[in-house]
Image 1 (cartoon, one colour):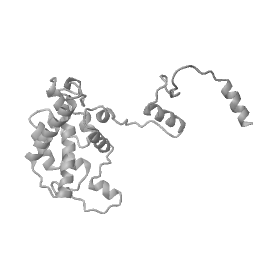
Image 2 (image 1 turned 90 degrees about the vertical axis):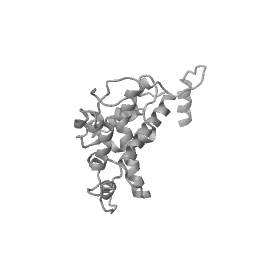
Image 3 (image 1 turned 60 degrees about the horizontal axis):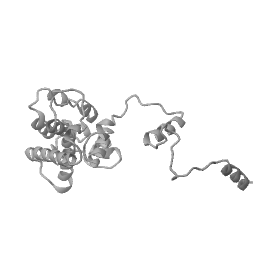
Image 4 (image 1 turned 30 degrees about the vertical axis):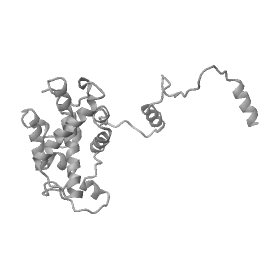
Length: 223
């Protein structure tokens, strides 16, 4: 019976010359996208409701930074980076003290925006710009990156400015890990130089592929 049904079904098909190709029926253009897959899965979940605070994916996936740094920023915005308070929350018993200042408990907000040594780095990089005082008052990564202003400039200046917050967050995290696991000594001036070197390294890598005028920037305002 099953064989008969199969034959009937095949006989009703008309074949055309050319190569076979996959088509995704849930997209108008028949091309598969992860977004369309999520959409169809979520529509099948009657208990799902769109979150009020939509994840700012453009701050992560549309910025011209290395892929491993994008994943770090993604985890940072979800507050899933393994700072000591997050490890404690996973029942990993570790004494909670900031590896940099050793004066406060380590959390994402403290490590990247509240630690006195990290604030010295931020002010050393952008403290000469009057408007940046308000930006540095943000105490969480999402608000910080969302409100990072655009520079009223073009070309390499604007491109490097767009990379400053990402390079600084990445370098602070790397230095923090070096201090914990390799007994490095924190030096503000050396960290600032490393941030600048990271920015130039990223620009060098990206400029070999695209025009710096096309590099994606974050933020909303202008200076």
